[in-house]
Amino acid sequence: MELISKAKIWAKSLKRDIVALWLAARDPRVPWYAKAVAGAVAAYALSPIDLIPDFIPVLGYLDDLVIVPLGILLATRLVPAEVMAALRVEAARRIERPAGRAGLIFILVVWLSCIIFLALAVRKLI
Image 1 (cartoon, one colour):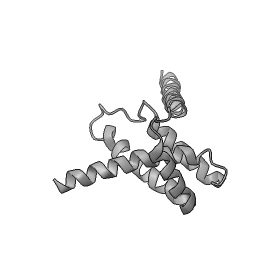
Image 2 (image 1 turned 180 degrees about the horizontal axis):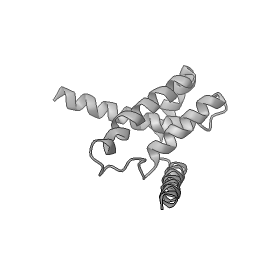
Image 3 (image 1 turned 90 degrees about the vertical axis):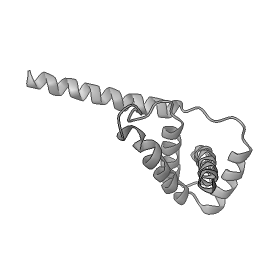
Image 4 (image 1 turned 45 degrees about the vertical axis):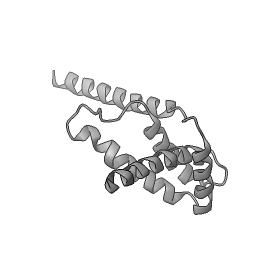
C-alpha cells in the first residue's frame, strides 16, 4: 500500500512540474537555454499525441516512463532553484492545465518528416 501512495505522490509532482516548466518557458528570470528545454519538455508532455504510439509494445510506453521524467529532471535542474520553487507553488495553485498545441505540432511535424523520408527512400529503390 505504501508503494502505491508513493507512486501517486510522484505522479502528482510530475504533473505539477510539467505546469511549472510550462511557466518557466515564459518567465524572464529563466536563462534562454533553460527556457528552451523547459518549453520542449512541457510541450511534449502536454501534447495529446505521443512520439511513439502506446500501442507499440514496450516502446510505446518508453516515453511515458523514461523520456518524460528524465526530461523533467533535466529541465528542473537547469531552471534556477529559487525560481523553480516559486513556479512549483504557482503551478500547484493553478486549476486548469495548459494546452499542448506546440507539442502536438512538433509531433505532427516529426511524423510528417518520417513519412516524407520513407516515401523518398522507397521511391529511390523503385
